[in-house]
Amino acid sequence: MHDLSDRADVEQLVSTFYLSAFEDPLIGPIFTDVAKLDLGHHLPIMSDFWETVLWNAGKYRRNALQLHFALHTKHPLGSEHFERWLDIWTSNLDAQFSGPIADRAKLQATRIAGSLQRRLAGRSGSGFETIRRREL
Image (tube, rainbow, N blue to C red; front, side, top):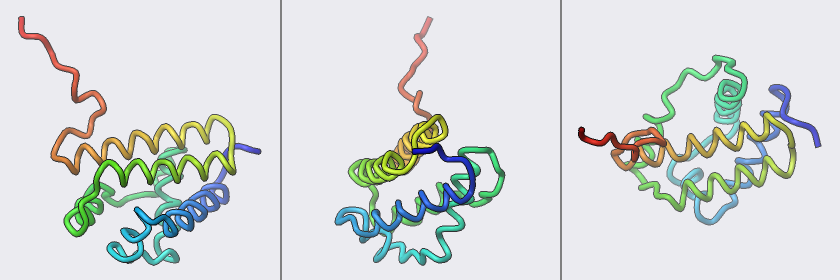
């Protein structure tokens, strides 16, 4: 297996991820029935997103949090949804790619899922939100 190295690899990963996610009984209906995603339109956007996340490509210019807030108002997204999303993402990555960039894609997906989940719950997006300063 090779590592993620270019746009074609990202497109392959994103495409196989969404095909799996659409078939999933827990999160599939959110994509198909609630968000009504058009994959032909959505896949290039998500490829831009992951190119930006992995290589700082600067191609993604949308507000992912705002989009998830809008979706959350239609269908509340809980920890089980983010966990399943992350499981499918990781499984697809592990089945196709191996190396430091693939590891970064898993780490960043974990961070993104956690941040979105915390923000949708009205908390800080930071993974360090539980660190508190002692009063002196």
